Length: 433
Image (cartoon, rainbow, N blue to C red; front, top):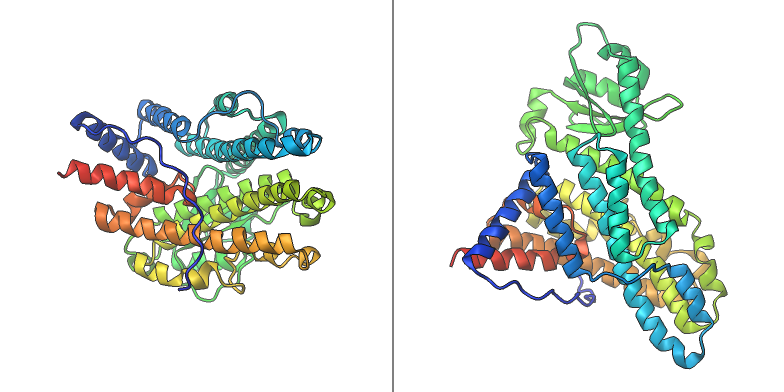
């Protein structure tokens, strides 16, 4: 695999003084993280874990004083004399990076609360936004975007609850959702997930349901899939193939629970991506208009860098989802060999930034091409490679299973995996001395 330029690492926070007490606390914390991943925490333990994670967030990402609106601050900088602009831009970039990280963390905290309690009161999630906002200066637009995530969840949640209530009979529900009329003696097991109707069926019926989706069935040898209903209001559903021969082939997922969790991730990410798209639009030209019109090269670089950083963050979330999902059916060594073909190949469906790198409007723009190569190729690929390499190190040296390792990292962005894993291994090695 080619060598890529490695982006500079964020400095580690001051190390915690090691003692038997702190090591025991750290081990307990890791135990809670694994239990959260597998849904084995009670409310008190979950609240304590979130409190510890918020403290870590404040330690690793120092708060911002007052409200910080990137658009307003950049507009002020443009009016400054040239001699004052350089220092103002440095402060702006630092606050922008802190706030961007805090917005991502806030979203993760919202997700974790929803996953722990599908019917969590909306007020509790809104209070979480205010908690982050008080520390990181979210402006009204940013708080509104976070609120959209919450509203989108409750809308999807209510849709699945309503249709289940309207059609308590499993066979009628299948007919309404998918347009397939199964015989009454056909066995089904239907439940309601956070934002989906979850259907368990044998191999023949799973294949019949799959034929009605947007996908074409190649064979009936699949573990599960997700799609949406045929009606006006989209209802998302997941189908798990319960055929015993199929499930025997999924040695790490004999019950289908991991397949369901994987499809939940896709559904959740689809919701969040739709909100991101509404936040800064699918129209790349419109998003880059300020960059196109700006004359000051330093300001121009800032605008483009922020735009690329946002788009790259979304792509890295998609990549993380695929990486953790792929570890259900392949080993780490195989995954590492396949990174090039999966994520760095222009013909791959997982090349999430290809559309932006090839954007014709700026194909002759030297700054756009320079920063695209740096941020969307070299740094992007280095982040993914370092994340997977550090994950392999955690499993090999830490003695964790892949599922335990995923549990410890699931709420961390890929760019933070090396830093987080270094801490985990440091504590693990201290414990066994």
